[in-house]
Length: 78
Image (cartoon, rainbow, N blue to C red; front, side, top):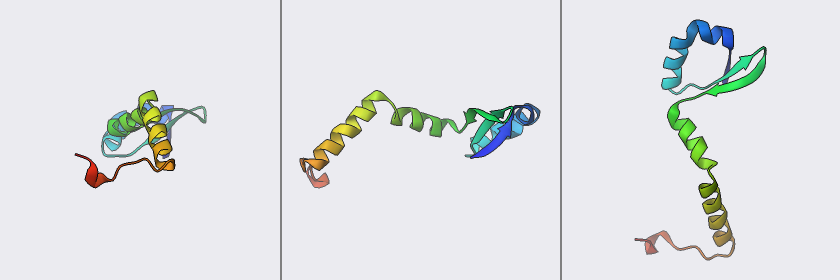
């Protein structure tokens, strides 16, 4: 992920947003330290959902079922 300072972001915001819409992602730094992340909304949604409590619980249940060998074959699912 590329880095961009706050000052540079202020000066080139429109161009950076266009790049982000095209799939680029940036770590925004303030005084050399990471302060924020700019990424396409689709990636942000995926990250939020992947860390949502409900999906974490579902992943844990699925892994436990797999470990117990109690999963179903895909052909048996409707």
